[in-house]
Length: 339
Ligand code: UDP
Ligand code: MG
Image 1 (cartoon, protein in one colour):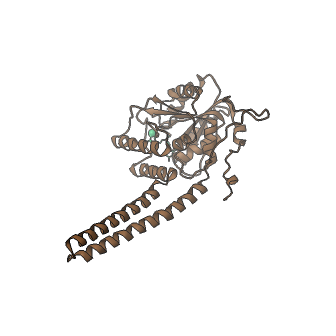
Image 2: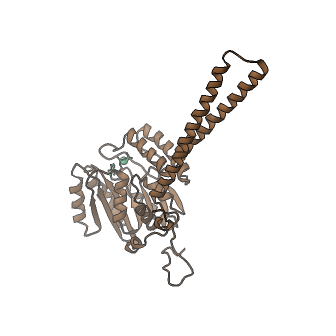
Image 3: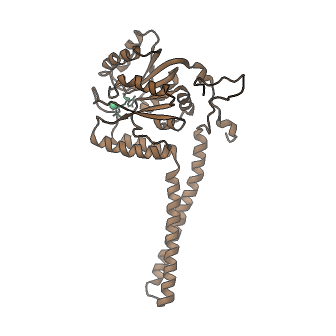
């Protein structure tokens, strides 16, 4: 596991061979959405039929306890292989469901969409057009969100944080109406991460990223599957999944406390030299020594954390770099985009 070759810098190309040129895949995670599915399909299908290219839809039933699976299977039965339903064994969460859908999808372009009709399917052609313009990832930006107020504030914070951590600024990382090129989808699937936040992971592999304003509606029926706790969990996953900053903060705090302790000792010494011995001098000196050692303990924890963090980065096995094509070699398949 330690040899650099094992990290597989060049992605396994078998998945690319599966991809079908000119095909658009729509990936929809579904968890207890039986009330929304018929209207979703009655709006999504005409949009797809209106596209100037072939399409497929992959629904992922994320362990629904209602009739979602039955409805999805009925939709698939009427579509002769263009609609597939991935039935997960239990509820694994929206992002895991999307990963399962990514793996099943074959399109050159893959679009994700929520099943509750908050993302208007009518926006899909605009996302595809933006991918055609040469972007690797196109994110929807819900300028006017129809969600509860606390969600909007939490989301604003989440977007700032994600932009900072991923290094790709975006207004709306939470909008799941997004389009990806095949090679991005393949890389995300290859990562096989347990707590992946798909838009952030995808952006970290993209060369060109765009964001277009999209409509946002109230949930057609039912309630959001997220509460404040699950949103906080998602943010924490994101921070620990993308950066070692929390560990580094620990070391920095340690260094800070130790430096303050040294300053305190110097001040105490100067005080003693100028004013002579004081009654509480010994007590303050003890405090300075104590602070110094507390700082050292923080620093030691941070250092141990740094090593643990490095091990974490290695076992996560994200590609160090991704080669899309090698140009100027006649027998090498050149990338479909011709760049
Ligand atoms: N979803 C899922 N698994 C889950 C939670 C949600 O597949 O554990 C799906 C859900 O059915 C919907 C999408 O993910 O299609 C977004 O969920 P939701 O509308 O609850 O999230 P919100 O819009 O409130 O962020
Ligand atoms: Mg929703």
